[in-house]
Amino acid sequence: MDEITPLTISIDLNGSPVQSTVQPRMLLVEWIRGVAGQTGTHIGCDTSYCGACTVLLNDQPVKSCTVLAAQADGARVRTVEGLEIDGQPCRLQQCFSKQHALQCGYCTPGMLMAATALLEQGGMVDEASVRKALSGNVCRCTGYQNIVAAVLTAAQIN
Image (cartoon, rainbow, N blue to C red; front, side, top):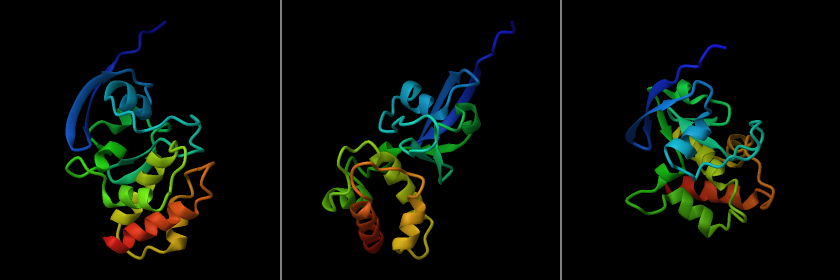
């Protein structure tokens, strides 16, 4: 049997360069949590259904359970930990809190990252665009109404 050769990757994680050696089949979510120690990104379903593992890869939302760490070599990856500003929650996170847009919190990091991508792309943000942006993320607790309201509130503040 052939031995699998580890790869060295370099990723800009939340604005800081991180270099590490990984197995070619390591998932980005495993790298984020296990190697980089950023545990805010959750592993939910391992099938890309739930969206709990959503991160921004070069400013685009991706489900990190479907991306190999090696595919992110040379890329910018932003996790929920990268949203804070000077150690404080960003506006979107504050809006989630004020609008009671979370209950168990398991889906929250993925929801925040999907919403961040929507807000950062600019353009019109309305209920339909928020619901479409969040459509790849599943919440089993909230009913989504407060999540949508929080994103709309954050869009008005920006």
